Length: 127
Image 1: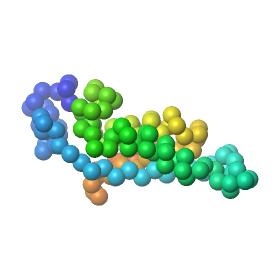
Image 2: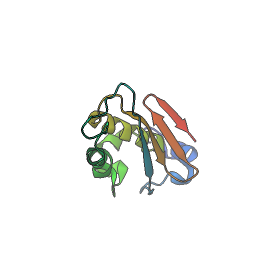
Image 3: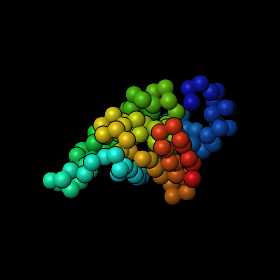
Image 4: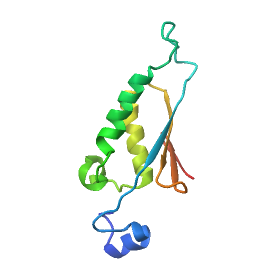
């Protein structure tokens, strides 16, 4: 965190406090809520076309984040610490701009199998 001293960063972030950065291979799972208020298209039989969903995920997640140094390549993280929690918020906010209102239920980001964050809008859960 730019707002902390080197000593405070080391105490707070431990081995993840590396001045040259460190990497993760995040996995994200999205739970799209098929709310009763959303209408199933009578022709396609779908609430949302999966091809469209893949395009939204490409635009909201893969293009800005894949193979990037979050702190240096993603403007959002210039002033926001790139924790798993904040990655989940970033994904949520980007998807919310593209998906029909009320369809996104939660974003689940795996930093490791033991470090998982679930974000449901204003609600963040660390598992």
